[in-house]
Length: 213
Image (cartoon, rainbow, N blue to C red):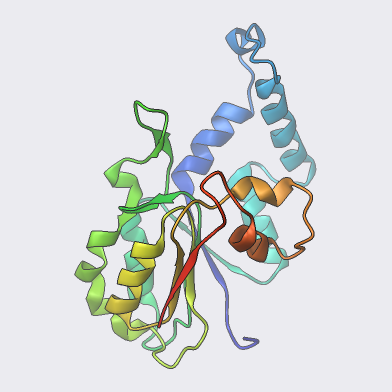
């Protein structure tokens, strides 16, 4: 909608940590050979960010937001997201979109891995599905007349989307299986990036999106 104002709510800690890992190649890393020169690739990525006049990843995100008239909001813990929601005027939120790692338990704002090398997150870095009901008091911040759904671009977000719909009484969509973020940088006949995420098959099969209204 042309009248909508867009906010980018960014969980900042992972971007700070990743910049520290990527921007410097240590002596020990120079001696490592993983077959892909991974450290050099990451260092080249940070060099490109600097060439565009940004100090780090977060600076680059703010730069892009500013150029596109998008309001930037940095948060440092999951609870800050609800603080931001609470600060919005009554009936002002038309939809919320999330893009990132997720699982059956909720949205993973910072990624780690379990002992089976599966994607995981610390509870302190998650917006958990079971906690949505605890924030029902903010339901009045949403526009109940909104027709565009809140979308959660992450693996196995269908249960989160279902709970979101029930708690906040707004349309929502989530994925029943994996989402392949790698398709963003691969050749595709689907030009629209978000549509590409919704339609690109993964190792788990064709994407299955669930809608709740």
